[in-house]
Amino acid sequence: MDQPVFDTIIVGAGTAGCLLANRLSKDPARRVLLVEAGRRDNYPWIHIPVGYLYCIGNPRTDWLYQTEAEAGLNGRRLRYPRGKTLGGCSSINGMIYMRGQARDYDGWAALTGDDDWSWANSLADFKAHEDHFRRDGGADPQQGGRAFSELHGHGGEWRVDKQRLRWEVLEAFAAAATEAGIPASSDFNTGDNFGVGFFEVNQKAGWRWNASKAFLRPIRSRSNLQVWTDTMTERLVFDTGASGQRRCTGVMLRRGGQRLTVTAAAEVILSAGAIGSPQLLQCSGIGPADLLKRHGVDLVQDLPGVGANLQDHLQIRAVFKVQGARTLNTLANSLVGKAGIGLEYLLRRTGPMSMAPSQLGAFTRSDPQRAHANLEYHVQPLSLDAFGEPLHRFPAFTASVCNLNPTSRGSVTITSASADDAPAIAPRYLSTDEDRLIAAASLRQVRQIAAQPALARYRPEEWKPGVQFQSDEELARLAGDIATTIFHPVGTAKMGRADDPMAVVDSQLRVRGVDGLRVVDASVMPTITSGNTNAPTLMIAEKAARRIIGQARP
Figure 1: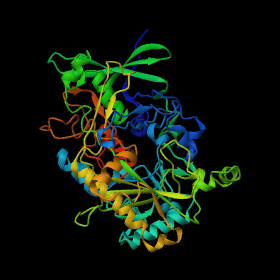
Figure 2 (figure 1 turned 120 degrees about the vertical axis):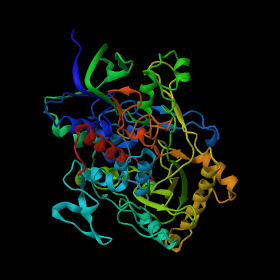
Figure 3 (figure 1 turned 60 degrees about the horizontal axis):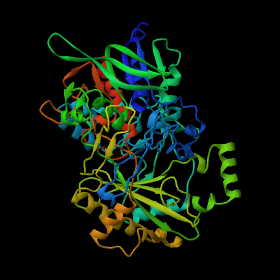
Figure 4 (figure 1 turned 180 degrees about the vertical axis):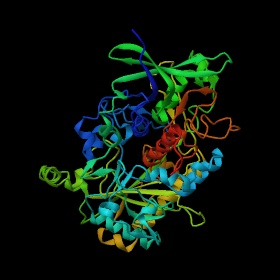
C-alpha cells in the first residue's frame, strides 16, 4: 500500500494544533494532516462549562498523568490533567482568557533575540483570532484613555465572553481586596494585570468554546485538510542527507489497529503540549543523549533541553468558612438545589452549570517592593478537600493563590522507548527558597484580605491552612500539604538563542539540528506567563502560522 503523503503533518489537535490546521489549510494547495490520539469532542460534558468536573480524571478526555512524588509537596503526587480529545486542554480547562503581562513577552524577545515576540509585536497575533463581547454590535468603549479596539479584536474565531452569574460573597471579597490596597480592574489583558475583578471566559451563549469548535468545525469541508482522531503517534521518522544533516520526513502512527508511516513533504509540527511534545521528541531520538541511551533509543540529535525547564503554577488553597452567605456548597448539597441548578441551565444557560472553576481573579504583589504583580488569586464560592472530591456541606469560599513567576524548574523524561508509557513528570514545586518564602507571604496576604471590613458580615473563619500556623517555615510546609497544580505546564522545549545550550527551538520554533521539524505549543515558552496559559498558546500558534505562511506582521 502506498504511504500517505501530506505537505504538513500536525501532531496534536489541542489549542495550538486546531488553530494551525485552520490557518495552514487556507491555501488549497497545501495538504494538511491533523493527528489526535484522543476521540472527537462529542462528549456532552466537554461543552457544559461545569463539565470539567467530569472530564478531568476521565480516560475519555484526559491522559490521566500523575506527577512524581514531590519533595516540596511533602512527598505527595498530584493528578496532572492533560486534554485527550479534539480541542485538547481547551476542552477540559477553566476557560479563563488571560494573556499575562507585557513583561513576559518582552522577556521572550530578549531571551530569543527576536523582537517579534515582544508584547507590542504580539498584540496583533492575540487580536487576529479574538472575538471580544465588548466589541459586539460595533461598540468600541474607551478604556484607560484609549479605544478598546487597540487591545482587543472582534470577528475572530475565539470568543471571549462575560460570565453569566454573580455571587455576593465574591463581590464582597473583591471589595475587601480593594480595601487592602488592590485596585479594581475591568480588563486583565492590557499588559499589566494588577488589580481585582471578574475573569472573562472562553464561552459562547453559556457553552464552553473550545479550539475544535472555534477553528475546526467551520472548515470541515476543506478537501485539503484531514483530521485523524483515535490515532497514536509513536515516533518521528528521519532521513539523512548527503551532507549528514537530519531531516524529519514524517511520522509513524497507529490507527485502527494498524501501523502506518505518513510522509510530510514540507514539515512536521509537534503541538502535543508541554508533556506530549518532549516525550515524542525523546522517544524519537531527540533529547539528552544519556537519557536516550538509558532507554535504548537511537540518538538523532543531542538536545539536553528537551524535557527540561518545566514550569507550572502551583496554587495554595485557603478555605474560609462563612455565615449567612449563598455558596455552591449549600446550593448543590440538596436534591432541590441540584434540580434548580439544572433547570436554570436548561432554560437560560446561566447559573452554576455555566460557571468556570474560578470566577473572581486578583493579581497582586507578594511585597510592595516588586515592580509587577507576582501573585494570582482564583476565588471560588465553594470548598472541597481536593479536586474531584465532594463539596463540603458548610458554606465557604476558597481563595487559591499562586506564584506567577516560580523559580523552581522541573522535568519531563521518558520512562521507556514507547510513547504509550507515561513519562515521569517532576515539576519540583517549592524547590527554591524564593518560592517557599513567596508561598508563606501569599497565605499571609489572603488572611489580610479576609480580615477587611467588606467581608465582616460573613464572619470568615480560616479552615485551611489554619490560623495556628504563622511562621515562614510553618506556612511553607503547610503550602506543601495543601497546594495543587492549576494545570499550566510550559517550557519543556523552550525557544532561545543559538548560543543557549538548553534551547530546543529557535525563535522560528524550528528544532535545532533537524530540518523539517517545529514545535508549536506551550512547551516553547522560555518562561511561564504571568497568568493562565491557554491564550498565550493560541498567540504562539497564530504567530507560528503567520511565519510559516510567510505573512508580514499586521
